[in-house]
Image (cartoon, one colour):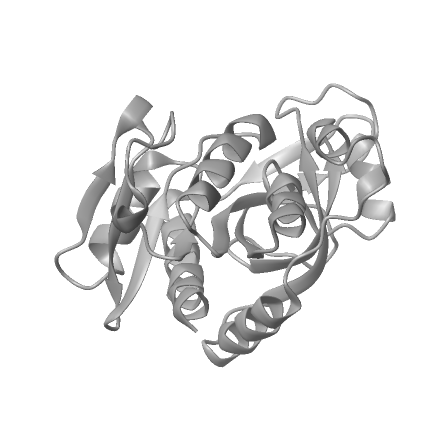
Length: 239
Protein backbone atom coordinates (compact mmCIF):
# COMPACT_ATOMS: atom_id res chain seq x y z
CA UNK A 1 0.00 0.00 0.00
CA UNK A 2 1.44 3.41 -0.95
CA UNK A 3 1.96 6.16 1.61
CA UNK A 4 -0.42 8.84 0.30
CA UNK A 5 -3.02 6.70 -1.48
CA UNK A 6 -4.19 4.30 1.21
CA UNK A 7 -5.58 1.67 -1.12
CA UNK A 8 -4.75 -1.62 -2.80
CA UNK A 9 -4.21 -2.27 -6.49
CA UNK A 10 -7.68 -3.81 -6.80
CA UNK A 11 -9.23 -0.52 -5.66
CA UNK A 12 -8.26 1.36 -8.84
CA UNK A 13 -9.00 0.87 -12.53
CA UNK A 14 -6.12 0.96 -15.01
CA UNK A 15 -7.55 4.19 -16.48
CA UNK A 16 -7.53 7.08 -14.00
CA UNK A 17 -8.65 10.69 -14.39
CA UNK A 18 -6.39 12.99 -12.35
CA UNK A 19 -7.82 16.42 -11.50
CA UNK A 20 -6.12 18.64 -8.94
CA UNK A 21 -9.15 19.53 -6.82
CA UNK A 22 -10.65 16.87 -4.48
CA UNK A 23 -14.09 18.44 -4.92
CA UNK A 24 -13.76 18.03 -8.67
CA UNK A 25 -12.92 14.36 -8.14
CA UNK A 26 -16.16 13.95 -6.19
CA UNK A 27 -18.11 15.87 -8.83
CA UNK A 28 -16.69 13.70 -11.62
CA UNK A 29 -17.57 10.47 -9.82
CA UNK A 30 -21.08 11.62 -8.95
CA UNK A 31 -21.87 13.28 -12.29
CA UNK A 32 -20.16 11.24 -15.01
CA UNK A 33 -19.55 7.74 -13.65
CA UNK A 34 -22.32 5.16 -13.65
CA UNK A 35 -24.27 5.06 -10.35
CA UNK A 36 -22.48 3.26 -7.54
CA UNK A 37 -18.94 4.68 -7.65
CA UNK A 38 -17.14 4.06 -4.37
CA UNK A 39 -14.70 6.15 -2.37
CA UNK A 40 -11.35 4.32 -2.36
CA UNK A 41 -9.03 6.97 -0.88
CA UNK A 42 -9.42 9.96 1.41
CA UNK A 43 -5.90 10.21 2.88
CA UNK A 44 -4.91 13.89 3.38
CA UNK A 45 -8.21 14.90 1.79
CA UNK A 46 -7.07 13.87 -1.71
CA UNK A 47 -10.16 11.93 -2.68
CA UNK A 48 -10.21 8.97 -5.04
CA UNK A 49 -13.17 7.06 -6.47
CA UNK A 50 -13.59 3.97 -8.61
CA UNK A 51 -16.60 2.96 -10.63
CA UNK A 52 -17.60 2.43 -14.23
CA UNK A 53 -18.35 4.63 -17.22
CA UNK A 54 -20.70 3.04 -19.76
CA UNK A 55 -19.99 -0.21 -17.97
CA UNK A 56 -16.19 -0.03 -18.22
CA UNK A 57 -13.89 0.39 -15.18
CA UNK A 58 -12.62 3.90 -14.47
CA UNK A 59 -11.18 5.79 -11.50
CA UNK A 60 -10.60 9.41 -10.54
CA UNK A 61 -7.96 10.62 -8.07
CA UNK A 62 -7.26 14.17 -6.91
CA UNK A 63 -3.55 15.06 -7.00
CA UNK A 64 -3.27 18.58 -5.58
CA UNK A 65 -1.54 21.55 -7.22
CA UNK A 66 1.86 21.73 -8.85
CA UNK A 67 4.28 19.13 -10.20
CA UNK A 68 5.69 18.24 -6.77
CA UNK A 69 2.28 17.29 -5.36
CA UNK A 70 0.96 15.69 -8.54
CA UNK A 71 4.08 13.55 -8.99
CA UNK A 72 3.45 11.84 -5.66
CA UNK A 73 0.00 10.70 -6.76
CA UNK A 74 1.00 9.85 -10.34
CA UNK A 75 3.80 7.65 -9.00
CA UNK A 76 1.55 5.93 -6.48
CA UNK A 77 -1.20 5.32 -9.05
CA UNK A 78 1.42 3.70 -11.28
CA UNK A 79 2.50 1.57 -8.31
CA UNK A 80 -1.14 0.48 -8.00
CA UNK A 81 -1.28 -0.60 -11.64
CA UNK A 82 -2.58 2.44 -13.53
CA UNK A 83 -1.59 2.34 -17.20
CA UNK A 84 -3.46 5.41 -18.46
CA UNK A 85 -3.53 8.75 -16.62
CA UNK A 86 -5.57 11.65 -17.99
CA UNK A 87 -5.21 15.06 -16.37
CA UNK A 88 -8.45 17.05 -16.41
CA UNK A 89 -8.07 20.61 -15.17
CA UNK A 90 -7.98 24.28 -16.03
CA UNK A 91 -5.40 26.53 -17.63
CA UNK A 92 -4.67 30.19 -18.26
CA UNK A 93 -4.95 31.03 -21.95
CA UNK A 94 -1.97 32.64 -23.69
CA UNK A 95 -2.53 32.28 -27.44
CA UNK A 96 -4.49 34.74 -29.55
CA UNK A 97 -7.96 33.50 -30.44
CA UNK A 98 -8.61 31.57 -27.26
CA UNK A 99 -11.95 32.07 -25.56
CA UNK A 100 -13.19 31.29 -22.08
CA UNK A 101 -14.21 27.61 -21.66
CA UNK A 102 -12.34 26.48 -24.78
CA UNK A 103 -10.75 23.03 -24.56
CA UNK A 104 -6.99 22.56 -24.72
CA UNK A 105 -5.49 19.20 -25.68
CA UNK A 106 -1.80 19.41 -24.79
CA UNK A 107 0.50 17.70 -27.28
CA UNK A 108 3.52 18.66 -25.19
CA UNK A 109 4.30 20.56 -21.99
CA UNK A 110 7.32 22.79 -21.54
CA UNK A 111 8.56 22.38 -17.99
CA UNK A 112 9.15 25.61 -16.06
CA UNK A 113 9.82 23.43 -13.03
CA UNK A 114 13.09 21.74 -12.03
CA UNK A 115 11.39 18.45 -11.19
CA UNK A 116 11.52 17.20 -14.80
CA UNK A 117 15.26 17.80 -15.01
CA UNK A 118 15.75 16.03 -11.69
CA UNK A 119 13.69 13.02 -12.78
CA UNK A 120 15.70 12.77 -16.00
CA UNK A 121 19.08 13.06 -14.29
CA UNK A 122 19.77 16.43 -15.87
CA UNK A 123 19.29 15.16 -19.43
CA UNK A 124 17.28 17.30 -21.84
CA UNK A 125 13.74 15.97 -22.20
CA UNK A 126 10.60 17.01 -24.08
CA UNK A 127 7.50 15.98 -22.10
CA UNK A 128 5.02 14.69 -24.69
CA UNK A 129 1.55 13.16 -24.60
CA UNK A 130 0.54 9.77 -25.97
CA UNK A 131 -0.47 10.57 -29.53
CA UNK A 132 -3.31 8.06 -29.80
CA UNK A 133 -5.00 9.73 -26.80
CA UNK A 134 -4.43 13.19 -28.29
CA UNK A 135 -5.98 12.08 -31.57
CA UNK A 136 -9.01 10.54 -29.88
CA UNK A 137 -9.56 13.55 -27.61
CA UNK A 138 -9.42 16.00 -30.51
CA UNK A 139 -11.81 13.94 -32.60
CA UNK A 140 -14.37 13.59 -29.82
CA UNK A 141 -14.06 17.24 -28.78
CA UNK A 142 -14.78 18.41 -32.31
CA UNK A 143 -17.70 16.02 -32.63
CA UNK A 144 -19.14 17.43 -29.41
CA UNK A 145 -19.06 20.96 -30.84
CA UNK A 146 -16.39 22.21 -28.44
CA UNK A 147 -13.82 24.78 -29.50
CA UNK A 148 -10.64 22.71 -29.22
CA UNK A 149 -7.00 23.80 -29.58
CA UNK A 150 -4.07 21.40 -29.87
CA UNK A 151 -0.41 22.18 -29.21
CA UNK A 152 2.18 23.00 -26.58
CA UNK A 153 1.47 24.32 -23.10
CA UNK A 154 3.68 25.37 -20.17
CA UNK A 155 3.76 23.74 -16.74
CA UNK A 156 4.83 26.47 -14.33
CA UNK A 157 6.18 25.91 -10.83
CA UNK A 158 4.88 29.32 -9.69
CA UNK A 159 1.24 30.41 -9.68
CA UNK A 160 1.94 34.03 -8.65
CA UNK A 161 4.81 34.57 -11.08
CA UNK A 162 6.52 37.96 -10.67
CA UNK A 163 8.94 37.64 -13.61
CA UNK A 164 8.30 40.51 -16.02
CA UNK A 165 7.31 39.46 -19.53
CA UNK A 166 7.36 35.71 -18.86
CA UNK A 167 3.87 35.10 -20.24
CA UNK A 168 4.70 37.09 -23.37
CA UNK A 169 7.83 35.03 -23.98
CA UNK A 170 5.89 31.79 -23.64
CA UNK A 171 3.18 33.15 -25.94
CA UNK A 172 5.73 34.24 -28.54
CA UNK A 173 7.17 30.71 -28.63
CA UNK A 174 3.79 29.24 -29.54
CA UNK A 175 2.46 28.02 -26.21
CA UNK A 176 -1.32 27.87 -26.00
CA UNK A 177 -1.74 28.06 -22.23
CA UNK A 178 -0.10 27.69 -18.82
CA UNK A 179 -0.95 25.25 -16.02
CA UNK A 180 1.07 23.41 -13.34
CA UNK A 181 1.09 19.60 -13.70
CA UNK A 182 1.24 18.24 -17.27
CA UNK A 183 5.03 18.25 -17.72
CA UNK A 184 5.67 15.87 -14.85
CA UNK A 185 2.74 13.69 -15.92
CA UNK A 186 4.19 13.29 -19.41
CA UNK A 187 7.69 12.71 -18.04
CA UNK A 188 6.55 9.97 -15.67
CA UNK A 189 4.57 8.48 -18.53
CA UNK A 190 7.75 8.23 -20.57
CA UNK A 191 9.80 6.85 -17.67
CA UNK A 192 7.21 4.23 -16.68
CA UNK A 193 5.92 3.43 -20.19
CA UNK A 194 2.29 4.32 -19.56
CA UNK A 195 -0.21 6.40 -21.55
CA UNK A 196 -0.73 10.04 -20.54
CA UNK A 197 -2.81 13.01 -21.68
CA UNK A 198 -3.64 16.48 -20.37
CA UNK A 199 -6.94 18.16 -21.23
CA UNK A 200 -7.71 21.59 -19.80
CA UNK A 201 -10.52 24.11 -19.88
CA UNK A 202 -9.52 27.75 -20.33
CA UNK A 203 -10.45 29.48 -17.05
CA UNK A 204 -8.47 32.72 -17.55
CA UNK A 205 -7.22 34.77 -20.48
CA UNK A 206 -3.81 36.23 -19.64
CA UNK A 207 -3.11 39.57 -21.29
CA UNK A 208 0.47 40.50 -22.17
CA UNK A 209 2.47 43.66 -21.68
CA UNK A 210 4.50 45.00 -18.79
CA UNK A 211 1.61 44.61 -16.36
CA UNK A 212 0.18 41.20 -17.16
CA UNK A 213 -3.47 40.82 -16.18
CA UNK A 214 -5.88 37.90 -16.23
CA UNK A 215 -9.58 37.94 -17.06
CA UNK A 216 -11.38 35.22 -15.05
CA UNK A 217 -14.23 33.05 -16.30
CA UNK A 218 -17.60 33.01 -14.50
CA UNK A 219 -18.45 29.97 -12.36
CA UNK A 220 -21.27 28.94 -14.69
CA UNK A 221 -19.12 29.23 -17.83
CA UNK A 222 -16.37 27.24 -16.16
CA UNK A 223 -18.75 24.48 -15.07
CA UNK A 224 -20.18 24.19 -18.59
CA UNK A 225 -16.72 24.10 -20.13
CA UNK A 226 -15.41 21.51 -17.69
CA UNK A 227 -18.53 19.35 -18.17
CA UNK A 228 -18.03 19.29 -21.93
CA UNK A 229 -14.36 18.40 -21.48
CA UNK A 230 -15.17 15.71 -18.92
CA UNK A 231 -17.54 13.88 -21.23
CA UNK A 232 -14.71 13.61 -23.75
CA UNK A 233 -12.12 12.66 -21.11
CA UNK A 234 -14.27 9.79 -19.85
CA UNK A 235 -14.67 8.47 -23.38
CA UNK A 236 -10.94 8.72 -23.99
CA UNK A 237 -10.19 6.98 -20.67
CA UNK A 238 -12.20 3.86 -21.56
CA UNK A 239 -11.33 3.81 -25.28
